[in-house]
Image (cartoon, rainbow, N blue to C red):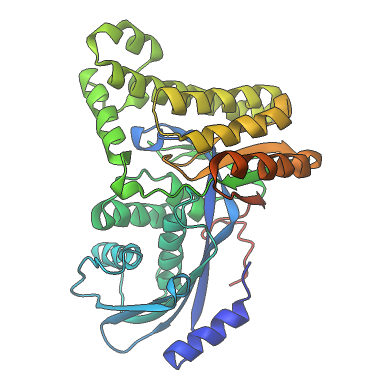
Length: 387
């Protein structure tokens, strides 16, 4: 957690007035279930102790003036009645997109001074964008005193990213940032948005290793993968790959382009793995969870083709230490970013040393390693942050 009093002082220095509200929304790590969310499938994310703060105060005019602490205190100001895409400050589009969606929702808004500060590593696959979106929704809801549910906030954040920013992300990132539960992962059905929490055993830790291979989903092949999935669903005359059985896919293998077949095989098998992982966590079957995470990474590497040599190496290093006492896999959209590992608390130091001694020597990249706790979402009933 960042020091709120320092952020309040910085807000005062920048805007000449005191912040009236502050909000916090966490980033997330997805334990298993990648590229399933936009296919109406299942995911198993957890909210983490890295996130975004948004401090805000009302203005008397129609201006929204935003300062980003993480971008050298750059200030962007726009009129909320005439919002345009900002090519010069891409980070501001996530905020403008949220404000635009709140207006479309019919929420009563006015101008605002907003100061944002976060510690989610940018471009790492830990959802810095969703964390920012949900923090802005929360801040505006408090500032202008309108009711909004966590599910509504997640949908607003997703639409802002889809419609305004131009990334066709699913709803997982925003949903877990809004409604995560402390010490538990969430099995989320991305079609009907029903969800169940499952605790992580106390003797296990979550380690996130940032490969520091940067990626930009909007400019990567992320949207291409989504189109490919939609093509296969259309082939089967189904709404989404969620509705296609693995046996159906195998029977039609000869009729599909090999690349489309592989993309679909990942999504369909990943849905199966994700539900099995939830059950494994319920039952404390860490050996099964370990195998499922390994199979997930293999599928992301060979069928969905979104890993990198660096991510593959990190998984290899970690798996060599952890064995079947936990698991390791790529997490997020891919094309760089992070690996997540679930491992016994007493193996954290050994795993850290193995990564630090082997990874940079082989790749030239210096990894960042985070041992995370699972925290509550911005709109969670068990909210840990008193506001």
